[in-house]
Length: 340
Image 1: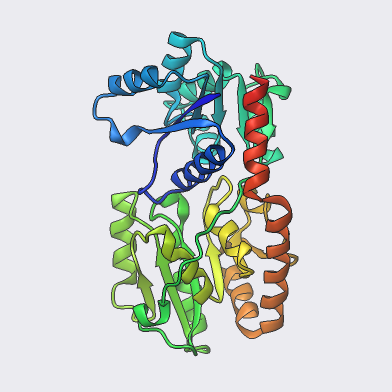
Image 2: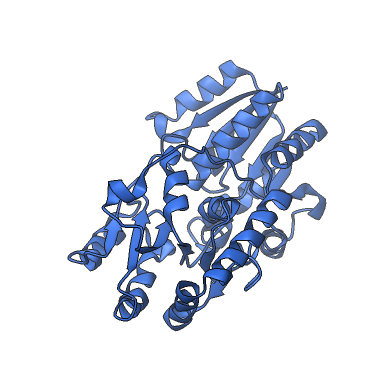
């Protein structure tokens, strides 16, 4: 069986899509599936994508992101008649599906797909409501898995931080939907009482305008560190050094960064949106918040209560081990491929 995976981003671009594709490709190859990932930004002329895929002679086409790979996989489906699998990612069903300009591409891609992979029931419910022509049995739920390379990275030395500092860590690309600056004001207020607070960001600037605004806001704040894009092998060290991992997104798929933090037993403080609720039960294996005021209250609670941080982290780790294993993720994909 030969599978061609089409991705809007692939490594070394550190994005959720690229990490998911790398994890899946590695798992499939370990199980004897012949698979090749085609990364769209690598092709200046999209006609070369079609040529290379034709040369590969796949049995199945698998596109990641219904909008960003949509036009490409639609053409491939028409030309080859091969089975088409689409994995929904986050912005495609949360944003693009409701954008008048992008919606037709998303809808057409979903209608042409033989199988659609989503990570949670709420995603399936959204697309069935918006695209009623889809058949429920063509949609499969496969939660994201976690695969984190455990390489040492001496974070405290690299960032000039001390053991007494309390680190809130925000791993996210800098763009509007990630809402990364939400933590600034509430943590600035808390810092008056808790001077040990430090805020660390890691993620590439994806939207230039958002990036410029963000850099302006943190300028001169000596307790805030922005690392820019960080190689994935260093994320293990960053998570380990952090006390709380934050996600303040306005919209999410199933965030790899939060899953990774949870897998290491780190307490997470995340915005109360469907993508985060799909992996976190408030006060059981993480804390959900709505707005700056609730963020501040729960951030202070985590600061003061070491036992709470430990309990949330332990429960988070258990959840990941039970529901988000790479083996399960890979086995489910192979099952779907075989059905086709």
